Image 1: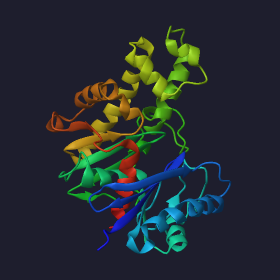
Image 2: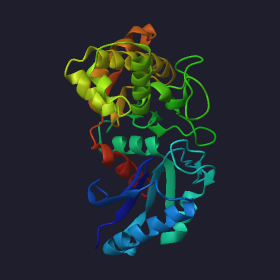
Image 3: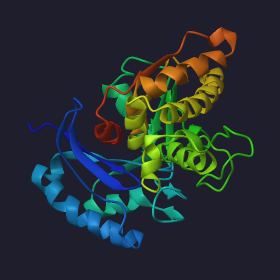
Length: 313
């Protein structure tokens, strides 16, 4: 008997990754395509069909149990992507229905960070945990909240938006249109914004000054590893805002652990060390020293594919 398979699709702001996954959480085959460069959603879906049709045919459509999709602002209840600030298209996109009709398979959608949290719970660092928060530190800040062993979706499917908690009152403008969101400070984009603002305002001597206009979170990380004082200050400032916000989140769901993944989280102790310190300093005493900060046990690109595929079961 052929082993049942699932197709997991992760729609990111830059790339769309996909993989065929078996029941044990092993990715049998994977690939990717660009999310950007398609003028309309129709063009994007046309490109997706061209890429995925032979991919599905290779494994036999009859062997694929279903399709799970993780996407920014993906609504589990309606199957729609709704006003995702980090995607190239605006408005409401009925993605689950479109993909299901395109391939003749049942398709289920959830928020990309929720998909990663489900992957982490089934195959990663949260295996066996009933209460945890997954935080993705990429282009934006995503999150998935699991409490009492259940993904929290809320009344409308949008619960658990840590990236859009106001972390700095009357702070900088966020892509969502509001001011002071955590995402505007603690994402890869946010730390770069801080770097550019500070370089503009200060005369600090730093190796990053030579990179003005080309600064990335990766360059800041590399500078910090070399002991650049300015880069280390950037990490400390970012960690303080993130740590203070996480202290508030702990008071709501009392998680066993907070698990991080995404580009910025790859800075490891450089970021998570001070995050832990600031979180504990700002924590209500009944929660102090109870919450572990962990890095994802899944490869970055694979966590969301694995989580998305789990939806198909």
